[in-house]
Image (cartoon, rainbow, N blue to C red):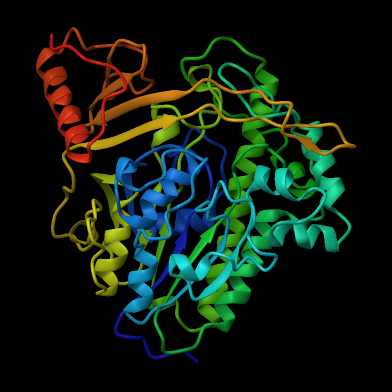
Length: 482
């Protein structure tokens, strides 16, 4: 039996961690099999030019939750929590009558390593009515190897698998750095499929959906932990990805082709597994009778360099790091491809708009509903991203004393701003000369054209200065007009 559609739509928001924009099933250069996402692309709107406000977990998700720019959301790097006083779009949906549910890795209290053993510590404060907030991949290990601080490690402790999981991560190496592949181990995890984190998150989503009342509009956010490194996949996933060939990294020095390919195989396998889990969740939505009245949104909090420009993970201004997939499908959404310039934080205003909820105060996000409904093909004229990341810590596990915070490797700080008009992209980085790329003729971002295109350079320089003045921030370095 199908429920009567409520006046307002339901929302299923899928946001994995570290899914770069081009690793999608409609990319003919990749051997990816993601039929669920492919189906969403075919029946919805695929945005080709979407970027994050900052390519780092905690500040990006804080910017999204608050609908504010990176410099205005109160979270500059992974050492800060979302301020409890900052309004969120989740709160606005809840106040308008929605059941607001969420599961997985929210990353909104990154510096406070306690989630509550049931994952409920912060959910109500952020605006959720239902769900489970769990640890991310490395946070789970750092905080809960000896004593669980969150629901995922509690489950592994209860199953007698916590030490097995920690030992496996220790054997995968530390965090990656510039030009360094420190997670070369792509062997399967010893964990069984049912406790593999993304599978466990998907089951939590299904269980939570089943508890939501009928005839009440709902919002569900599913925060998968993959395809974030390390590239740990289950034995069944490993068997399915062997023998696949992926393209070599862009603009990179020669590296071990077999190592790079095996890393990319595992990255693709995590995405394919997430695709299968989304299929399971959609079946649960259909069984609930709500599929016809549910808007489905798929995106990510940042990309992964995957060796491009000799870099790994995120935090960099190149497209592999800042650009993310964005697909939206459901009632009232047109079908096709869109080149509208979209910031990830614009989803906050979009959910509010579609739900007819009260706007957030001091919101920088802009609703893309006019694009979704086919009233316009344009959205923004400029996209901004930036980062002010302080030195971080990489902990070492010795198998006996656990993860040692005394043994640390502090990566260099990252301070940069970028602006992109859909073709030309200007990057201003600390202690570096400004660089401008023409992504139309140079999609790999290798040629600086700042001296050759003075009109475009001055236009972007003006735009980035105006944005910094608007948000009350300084550029990481001075720039001179040419």
